[in-house]
Length: 348
Ligand code: KG4
Ligand code: ZN
Image: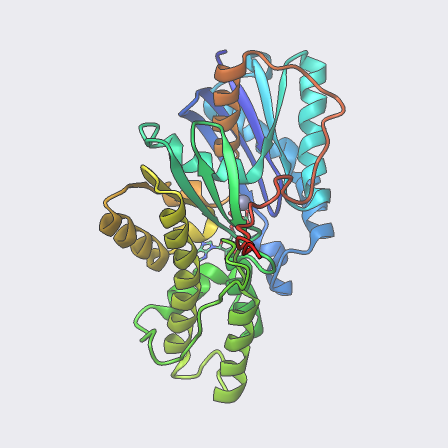
């Protein structure tokens, strides 16, 4: 295979990439819809799918031009199937199917969260297995165990908000802008994270699932009780405290996962993996554990088609050519059930 064209439209980024090898991204064009959704403080699904529809042809053309290839040079296509916003996913999926059908090429349907994990391996194909992978984004917060390459076992996922979603919602409440994660990171710089107390979310069933709704409620209480707003002098302290609480909750579960499934390497990916505080906490933990660790460079953390193409190329190398399944469908939620660690029943 000489060239693969990948498409990603699971949320609010329209992206296309051309690859000429499993870790070789020739172009990776990402057209963000941030400005479109900013007035609403979050993604409006109907607006997102319409915007994908009007952007996708331009984005794909840009990706081909930047890579210096024509559509006839493309030997295979890849597209995100899910999880994500169903209307957004269907735009990318229908477009990719139409291209694959008309050019008579195979099409790989790719899972978005597995692609985020792959983003950490593109620049570090040497990462040893088993790996524990932590994906922290706006739509997902999950831990996976990869015993081997391309073998994913979901250990835990969020039961309510994702970590990025909690950051986005608190930013929206304070009218700070969208997306909230980077805005909070900027405004929290220089703040003292220890002045506003936040508890640690605990799962009563000992699972490795996450929950961020309690932290979000605690944040809203601090905002109301402290009369916090955009211009309040204590805002940087509050935001630093909230950011720290989110990072701590994420890292707590990773620590527990490493006790249950000692890994040879740790991976961190997803949009929130751009956050300097989380990157630092992850690095410090991995060094203390004595484990190898890998993070994607920031541009590969947030949604992009390069990671989708990289995973598809690996699938191609593992399983061969692949075909064109016109029944390939989009799915809004993760299709893997989480592994819940149930308490052992006492023998009576
Ligand atoms: O991976 P992504 O692009 O989309 C999903 O799959 O959800 O992640 C987007 C999320 C948003 O919630 C955004 O606020 C968050 O990533 N994010 C950040 C940072 N940059 C993006 N969160 C914290 N710090 C950042 N620097
Ligand atoms: Zn994502």
